Length: 264
Image 1 (tube, rainbow, N blue to C red):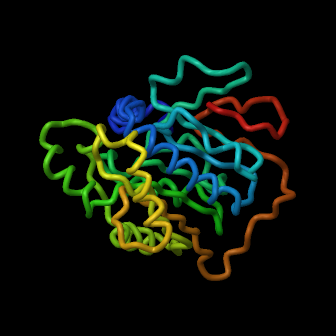
Image 2: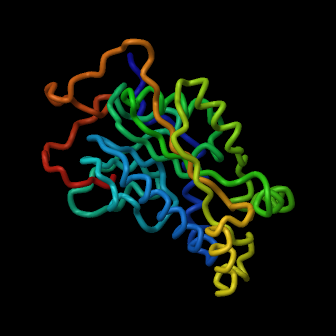
């Protein structure tokens, strides 16, 4: 019997649920604004039919800037009970998406890799679900600079976000290349120091302006966009084929055929 991919446990989702609490702090809110801006800018350049956002820690949503028709959100367990009218809840694991193979045009991973027990498996799952020429957007913390130093100093206290395994851009690019992805862009995100007391201090915005002018200020994090490479002469599946179910594991697909985004 095939295992129900939607019911697999995932401790990473529990960690990401607690990370959302840190995003309610002054420093977390400031970082969220910068990350949402970066994701919105990237989504404005992507096209397709189906997008999956995996366990976002933010209170806001970047999907209002997406040109992709259907947007699915796979939340951690603490968000499954609520939702707006017409919302479809989608449970899953960061290492086993409840989606069929070659069904997604884009996947967004906001800090998912840093708190996953097996980040390589997460990327393999992204590779399985993406169509050829599909895109993955990854947000990560910079292991170097002040934020990387803070992780070394406070990670042993088991306080988020410093418990994550920060992954460098170089290493992430190598992982993606092995799976057959080409890096499209890599954008630094947020240039303020990792201090709650200074997060809301207006002069700290000077760091953002100096970085925008090209000053070598190490960023707190980054956004990397990669495209799944087409191997050999594998033909693209025609977009006019009959619509098929996207959900794996026997889940019932919503009957609505509207093109409005669905937050799950």
